[in-house]
Length: 245
Image 1 (cartoon, rainbow, N blue to C red):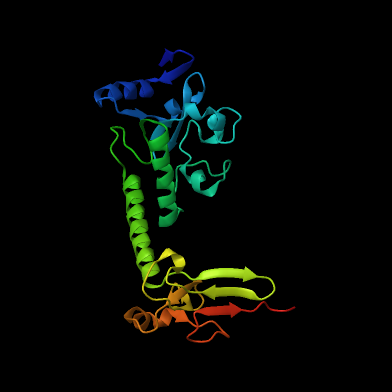
Image 2 (cartoon, rainbow, N blue to C red):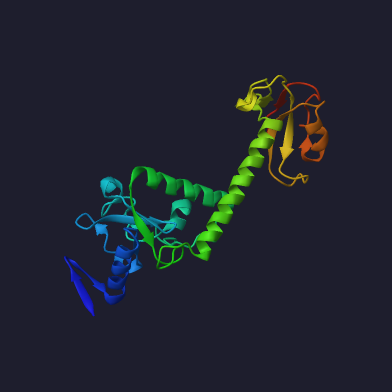
């Protein structure tokens, strides 16, 4: 059975969903086939991100047929918002993303909430027929919570060990130095440059941090800190000379 609507058709399953949407107090739940109708200027340009549907028609110069981001239209291509792969990764499966990447994707969701018209939800990976969240949606929220916790820890670490000022000169090398405002963290001490590793292993990545050597924070985190080779222990400035070939 087909129901004809203007320039397109909906099958009986889609028609049932349209009826359900009326009972949901105006909250529309799209099927994937229904969302595919909104890929042109006549019907409108709709996209979905994390299962939420937005009308982006006013952004036609970006999302219209033949435009740079038209691949996002008529589907949920959440993964591609992060990977930038507009051909092979036009999928709503984001299970491969880290917590931090999911947070970036959620930032995109907030961007669309702020700048475009929210139209409803997409039945499938993230929402059920009645618009309630699925187990996959719960997993996204869990990763967002992890990202929030990681961000909080990063900010705490940044306050304890503010980033150094860094300048590179091809003639002399890289200069690291600390002030009582370096890293954008105002404080009543200056500190000395040290390599701060993510873990106690020197195989992990590091950054330059300003460290107060007579602090409890330094004593508790010594295992993650290293002096720069060739730099005086108590100097607030350190130059790593360019290696001559």
